[in-house]
Length: 477
Image (cartoon, rainbow, N blue to C red):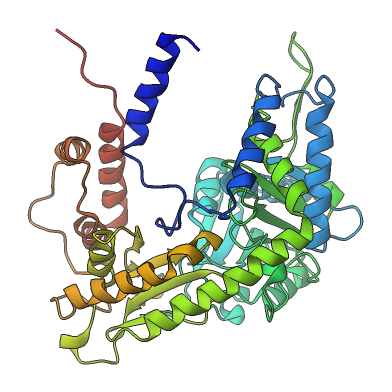
């Protein structure tokens, strides 16, 4: 390695010093740390071996087809796919969901030639934002069905009431990311099947942990009426970003996600995913991790995670002023203010997250949301536990308790989003520049702003902020 190479890597290390830690259980969102350093090393070596491979054409690079086939076979086994189940390895849950929505839209159109209506996706209000994004990109209407504001649970009958001849796809989550609550998959799938509507289960976060989580109600492809499922290998599959699996039980529906073109003068194009040329590095890393762990390895990691989650749940249950929302299934918890205690004893979950961050643990704030029926999902703070959390349980528990003590009784707008926009909005560009210079951002204030503004306006403000935050420095005069 040359001196210049060392300088390049040193600069990268300088940039990385600004990042939240990806290992060690201190970031309770975004990263899924198995706690096994040897697994990360194996994934890195596997990725390096295919660094130059282009996943565009598996006939030129058959290793791509072979690794994908192994991963799909593993996923089909643990997610109980029937014979004929196929699918794809994608870049992440968003792409898996995008393809599921695409296939359902095209199936709907093919069965209704000349129908000028806009097809619909019907989903709980807690369904992942990727469904909204897919509907936006692909020209569908997104219909969200309210859940219980106190528990985050969905009444299947309420969703069934929204299903009609314009519905191209219905959605259930296993579990829903915001609260970690499992939707009633059996009831939703049955209602969809009775109307001839595909049902997609979003198991992006739960797909490779719930199969070994005892006591989980039926939720996967074994459920009658479930037509497709997404499960992320880079979440509780413990593979590096980005790798996900989409499984489709009906081969004809599966074909609808493909794009093929021969009507141009270049090479014949057939794309099973959104991307054309794509790296095989994430695929190889995921393949290595799954091959190394197997069902036994995942069972062992999940068994430890069950204990970790129970311990953290017990800690939160013992903190006056806070409560775990609903009855989560799996290693995700949403923590909100306990409305059953006197106001001086209540704890704002966003202020709590900021106080816990000062003690070295990054939690994820979730703003309040007014649902279609006018009910409000209160603000919460999200915690994703991983096997690595086991190594810091004592310190994490102490931080959660002490953080709550720091902010208990702080005046809040509880139970509903604040009414009306603030008189003066912050300049998103100035906010981004200040955050980039200081390395700090007042997230509770940003989340409160999202609650206070109309959602379209807050979305535009966040776009301006992120565009400024990631923009290159101004050129020299």
